[in-house]
Amino acid sequence: MARQSVQDGYFEAPFAAFPGQIADFGTSNDNYVRGFPAAGAVIGGRGVVKGADIDLDANANPLNQPAPYTVKAPVGGSVAADFVGIVIRTEAMTNVGDPAEAAYADKTMASVTHKQAGGALVYVKAPVAIAAGDTVFMSVDAAQAPNLPVGEFTNVTGAGVIALTNLQWYKSTAAGDVGIIEQLLELFNLVAR
Image (tube, rainbow, N blue to C red; front, side, top):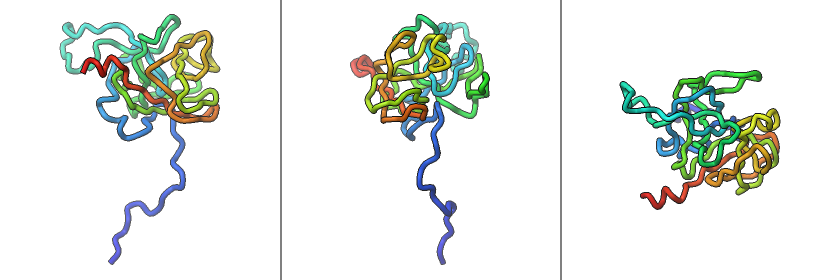
């Protein structure tokens, strides 16, 4: 007697990815993604920078605060050292803005890759054609919108963007598609271990 399969068919190609989606199973590991309190809405698939410090000693339950600071959308004047990671899309997000985009609301816990997440792969919007290994630049200037909203990534240098040396474009992607960014392990983390 033959057993019936739970899955009776397979798609020839995977479904399209969306910004903020984890690109491989390994990236879902706790070593790559941490919870940070959001200071303002932070949108899936975009970069965030360090916000205000949190006084963990004054918190009644410090176990609920996994990070000593908040994360927020980049602002003019943000530098590469302020970069925390890429916002990961989860069911905890709500739609904000017009057109609506999935985001963590202000004062909620946001899932974000972090600087120690060497090897993390995350889908993001690719505004221009991308080649594998290209340098990643993040928009920090609202004047770039709507072509490159704050926190989105590109491989083109210029005014209003900062270079992020611990990231690289993982594979070639056509303009307007969703590409993959790989977060590289920073050298100081190797020395510290």
